[in-house]
Length: 115
Length: 288
Image (cartoon, rainbow over all chains, first blue to last red; front, side, top):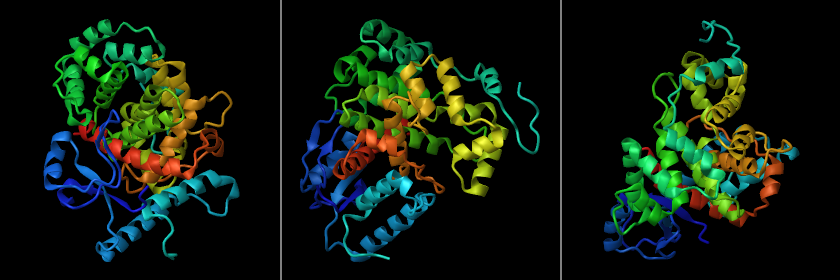
């Protein structure tokens, strides 16, 4: 599994980007396998399949600023969505677990400790 | 039918809801039949297909869904029977139900109620519940439909008591509480009770009724496994922020339901991704 993944609108997808996940249709048939490096021809064909966004591997070097902005957005958003969850309430461990899983999903597995 | 709205609290009873249910737009008869047949193995598909095709608007929307490129059909289906042949009965039934229900309630009567956001959340929950059900080897068809309809009682309240529901929205914003709490405080009843009333009125199966009744309290004895699936799917979709509501709030997750599913982190990460992907595809067709 690729931890760093981004759902990118088709208009922003460029040839050379890598699919972070296999691309499935609703019946579960594979359109393109995971790790496919997209070509211009593939991207052109996406609208015909009704696909408006693709799961793209986030390149490690790709604009650190954008990445940081994305992380900051998700951190703030998660804090807001989970504002009723009390971290000190041990009885509420299931909500805490969901929060930690979604946080891993949004921010990637633990990288640098962030405030 | 309901009492003149007082400026303070309106105490509605389930009888007020029941009285107003008859004024709601009804689902096409054949959709009711499809919903009712969800438990049955021996449905006569050709008869149902024929009945659906008498409803031209419903047929058109269903075929648009079926022909949307997300199913990747090589041929263009032009009849319901053809759709069943290529997509299977279960999928076609899901499409018919989704097409019928999402167009059933009038919009814009209740200021501040975001119908689009409501359906975004419902569609996302349906998608998530279906993936969860596959993981749990549970009937995916039940899960999809229950996910789509779990909050349907809210639309009942909004449609039957639009002015009162505007106050619910105001109360929720003022107290930053869960919609469920705001409904109870302002109306005296909540969308769960209204949903159960509608489920009775529409003759939903017992499984579906239980899931609607207990998606907020799946710990209740006898709530059923589907309640647990819908409960978790609801929380996951809130946490993934798929409905994109500014004041979105993740409900408390039942540890009993969480344990009943017993999935580890890797499965949840897969579930998140698959839910997002499926949601994008379904929402594009249903909400366009």
